[in-house]
Length: 142
Length: 142
DNA sequence: ATTAGTGCAAATCATTTGCAATTAG
DNA sequence: CTAATTGCAAATGATTTGCACTAAT
Image 1 (tube, rainbow over the protein chains, first blue to last red):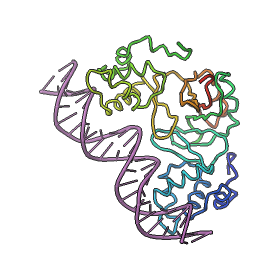
Image 2: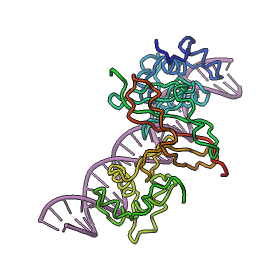
Image 3: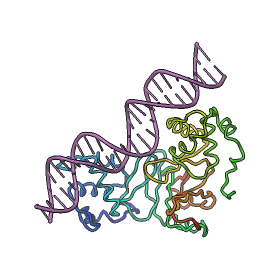
Image 4: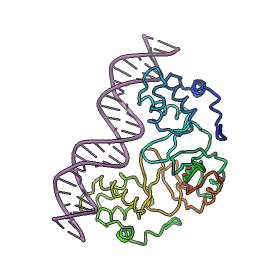
């Protein structure tokens, strides 16, 4: 249990899908379930590999991509861009930033309130709607 | 003239390539030249289109990609990730951040000293080597 | 001559899409 | 029955790579 918990874990995936207007098919439920329980910021390929066996029926790559897009559009998950060439996903949809451990590649969520005032620093030539901070360095003890 | 100028404009592309240990072929010089004179954060395709005619000989897509990678490895330019699926490049290699105008798509450099202290906020469980801030919003008067 | 750099076309990787088959209401 | 979803395979888009050719030392 950690302090970045979004509390989504307390709900089951099916309820979350329903509450976001997404029809809970078995594939979607399993993918949502996986996303809600991991903090690993997986790629589509990661999700496919992790979830493939958990389903009675086969799960196609296309469905993983379609589902991740559906979940993103519905606001259940969010995209994270940390590296060129592939998209990662994060079920923590609260306002937050990311820390990439340059040694391990691990990606850790950083709550927004740690870096709250940045937008105000730019002055009024910029109307800041939001910002993303991507930290990189080392997580102590990894 | 703007306040984000890196002063690279004062040098010619050939000198910059030489000083970074990159052999200044005609293709590289023209690409470097273009990169040093634009603030538009172009993709490889953008560079190809902008530079193609400026050369007596043909310029291939492969050479644009190869050259941008060479320039990046040599520290002449830097990658900028603002959107999934493609890489943008920036000849401003000073420590800085980016602001994306959500209306126009325009990308503007933000000097690092505008957002200097962020790394310190994370506390000592994170050894911060650096960070990138991607702002999004609207640039006044665009 | 040897090595590096270029261009073309083919290959690769991540992702999307068309469409027929399947499932749910 | 009708509409939505899935899977497969083909298509796409960005980027990389193999290899023959050219340029420069």
